[in-house]
Image 1 (cartoon, rainbow, N blue to C red):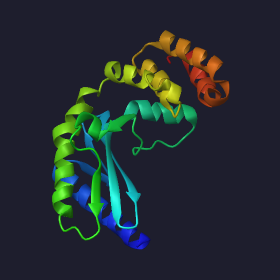
Image 2: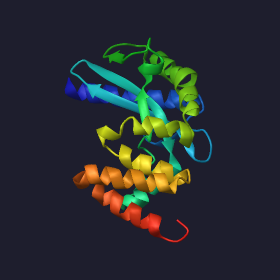
Image 3: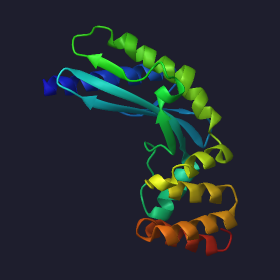
Image 4: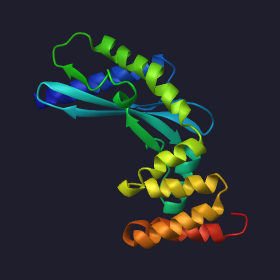
Length: 201
């Protein structure tokens, strides 16, 4: 049954991606899609799955991928830029409470209808939400609200401040967070502060 579940998951993801592409999203990987809001911001789609013996549970997330923030984060961290990573995301159910979690059961014959329903939910609820937060001044407080989670959020805050031209704030935040979270933050903070000291930074 586990193999059936994996096969079902792949089938569901494939159909969901196909439905999203039909509604204007762009496929950039086998199960990766997003929607270009402008040259720098994308509506990010996260189709998280759980495979069970007789069903697949699909948890849909939505948010934004800010290319400039993520490219700067990757550059400073010495990592490869990854379009698949959200800058900020939430569960689609938070902005469309009636959706909650999508459960697909083995033997159901309405996968295409459910995939279309999911795609429409992204169009109707997810895309407007992503567009509403696709600005540095709007995303900054959302990122700041998660800095205690670590997980890249402090780095995103620093990068966002930098890209907004708020260099003094970027420096102050980075120095203060480095003092509080030396082990976690040093690998990013040290090169970031060095960058701030460079001419024309």
